Amino acid sequence: MSLKVDTPGIGVTLSAGDDAQVRVSATGDYSDARPQLTTSKSGDTATVNADCSGSCDLQLHITLPAAMRAQVESGNSEIVAEGLAGSLVLRTGDGAITVRRPTGPLSLHSGNGQVTLSDATSQQADIATTAGAVDAAFTSAPAKVNIATKDGAVDLAVPSGAGYSVLAHSSGSTPEVDVPNSRGASRSLTVSTADGGIRIH
Image (tube, rainbow, N blue to C red):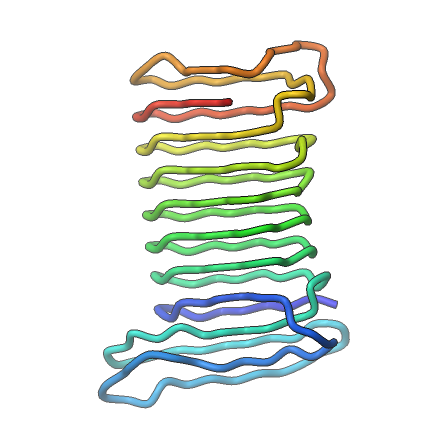
């Protein structure tokens, strides 16, 4: 089962539901034209599309089964996901991304906004921003983390008991790495930024 969400200019909050249903609600304000919301299902994929042609300050709230895969495209708005176990592909052009307590693989990309990841037990994470800081914290040792920013600091926290192969590069400063760097380790942490500090601890 998978969920696809496309909401240009409308924020999205994903959270785990108590059953196998996908439910959608909205909060906020709009003026001019009424926002458009459509839902559909084809095979194992549920789709949610929303658009606002006028002035909108809206957030869609979507509950889904915790293990369902989810892909969200939000043109210029915030994306929040909490307590989900399926793979998450979250992309916004101009907005923050906040993910709490994920356990599945992550792909998080923001063109202009901060990415915050907390209490993660995901084994793989790919995080990128063009202009925005990244703050990522794992409560269990990940197998592979890639973080890249062009203009923003990176703070990456991982359990210290595991061995990691660490590659960190910043054009503007010297990375601060406070975990043992074991070149032959199977777990890898790769962090780069063109303009911003890096701390791995």
